[in-house]
Length: 175
Ligand code: SF4
Ligand code: SF4
Image 1 (cartoon, helix red, strand yellow):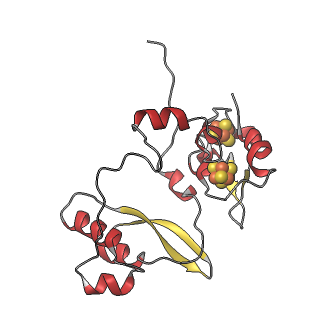
Image 2 (cartoon, rainbow, N blue to C red; image 1 turned 180 degrees about the vertical axis):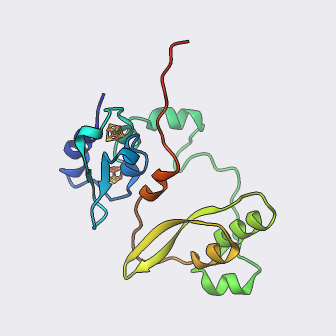
């Protein structure tokens, strides 16, 4: 089974890591302190001894194509961009959303619509926390969703802090 050590060799050392934070966010042992992001958002071992060698970080890294074939098959992917059901051009009818958004505010409008109608309890979005820095957070109100509107030329990384609430650990049992 490949581990984060293989990501270091195959992705980080060749300079392919784009600091998405996926490996840390989904690490099975992140809430036991196996992986962490450094201050620049680069993933690294916090405590290698806590790694249970499950291989999940390697499998889900977008620079690893292990799941590409199966994913494309399951989603009936077609070139050049996948299976397109329909395309349209839209913008929010809410002037307040359009003013805050970069373009038409469609994503913000859709999230607020779903929230107002009880279809979602919240949404994971990002907010600016400093110059060239954004952080993911769980928006639990319309204001939270609106605060996250707009595009900025910066990056956000994984949601490691949510690891207090969830785990990707799956117990394998003989049936
Ligand atoms: S999952 Fe993202 S952060 Fe982790 S090694 Fe791959 S590209 Fe880098
Ligand atoms: S516990 Fe699994 S996901 Fe976490 S570092 Fe080890 S191999 Fe990767």
